[in-house]
Length: 102
Image: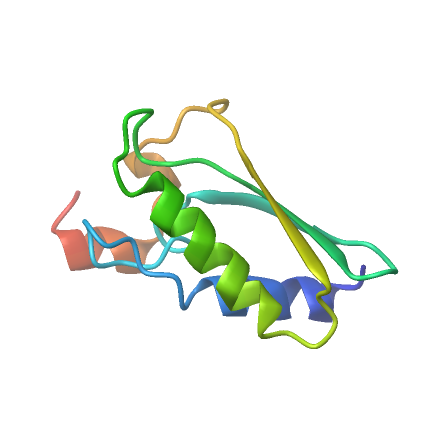
């Protein structure tokens, strides 16, 4: 997968807004990696803000919908991981400003 495709996938994921925080999952630092195979199989490795996140299933569904908008993507697998543990240090400057985090 080339960098342009990775950028396209990350751009699509920037449209996925965490319903509780109102900031997209990329700027929150929840997306750790994206991959796309030659046959259009996308894998997103990401985490959630907490293990008990009630919005987890909804966020996973929104991730899939966002990536299916890309013509190169045929199938999507979302892998939720808990290592490394998410923390505010993963957030972009934009997300920190939007949420008032220092």
